[in-house]
Amino acid sequence: MAKNASDDSARKQPGAGVVGSETGFTSAANRSGRSRSRGESDDGPATDSTVVSDLPTLLGREPYDDEARGWATLSPSLRVKAADRVALMNRWWGERGGLSADEAAVIADVTTKRFYQMASAWRKRPGLLAVGAYAAASPDRSTRIHPVVNALLQKHVVKAVASSDEDRTVEWIRRKLEAMVREELPEQDGEGKTLAIPSPNIVRAVIVREQNRVADTKLLGESIVLDCCPVSMRRPDGIPYALFVVIDRGTLRIMGHGLGSVDASVEGYALAAASTADWIARSAGTRLPWAPATRRADLVVGNDRAACDALFARHKALAGHFEFAPVTNERRFGSQIRRYVGERVGRVMLRPTWVREVPPLADGEEVYDDREAAERVAAEVELYNGTMPLRRSGVGAEGAPKALLEFLRLLSA
Image (cartoon, rainbow, N blue to C red):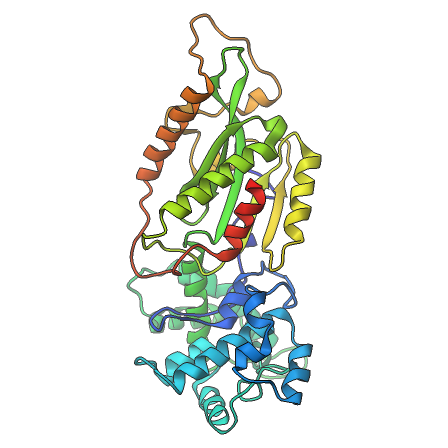
């Protein structure tokens, strides 16, 4: 397993956001929190800088002086939060569509009481101040919980949610989580302050955020990995083809593929990226479980390290780029295919040891020209994907994340 490839420990911090799936609205805490890995700063790149950088467009009017000054002090992720809360207020005082105050509070990542205060303030003077979006922003719930209690909640909520059956209610999970926390919760902290579990509403909010974090990691395009590896198919001169793939971690689908050489991996990944973009375009009319944003991508670096480094640098220069990390350990080739797909893709066998030394062709060994190799790989990938059907329910975004499309364009260029 590649040590620097993304795994479960690199996923988003539990409790980083909430999706209002029943209301069709995605909260800012959700979008901004999910764009960061554990331990990352709140000053990281916003999910959609185009939307939140234009304050007059966001407000539908010229901002007041105090709003302009406050906006200038906000980090990108807090601008996303402000934008989502403004949209929520417009909906609340417009076409609610059955949205309740409790649901709206969860979307805004505040208590119901605080939401009513925000709604009242918006009614009197619509703007950033009403949604608590200045530099101090809205009070972070974690700051109102003792750090020791909050740490225990975050520590155990992952296990409490993961070990619960799908039909378990939030209330059942709340009781289980509180029992887990109580087992480790001291009566007092080092300063003699009494420690207590917060109100049931706050604990439920922690659980709902974790449930939606888990749900998001299973959506298409949330996290992808690009891998390459020599395979059993060889050219007439004995040189093996290398398979390049774009794999979606959440659905385990091979989104795109190509054939090339690990010595020119950037070119091979360009083919796989173009294949992925083509598949997305062909699927445009199909309802797929797309994630609202792409959180990260990892790429197994080929033998053309300098070209790969240049690719990483170009991606970092993109506005609103997500995390894009190299996999560089010695046994990296094919490591991600084996992890997410298996030791082979249908009849196409992985041959990672052939990176170092290719055995001579055996008498009678089958060889392929470029057309034959491409047709066989395409057929095997299609058969594999047929065993990984994508849910076509109403969950997910309307289409592929914009940042993912820009990423594919960058690679395929």
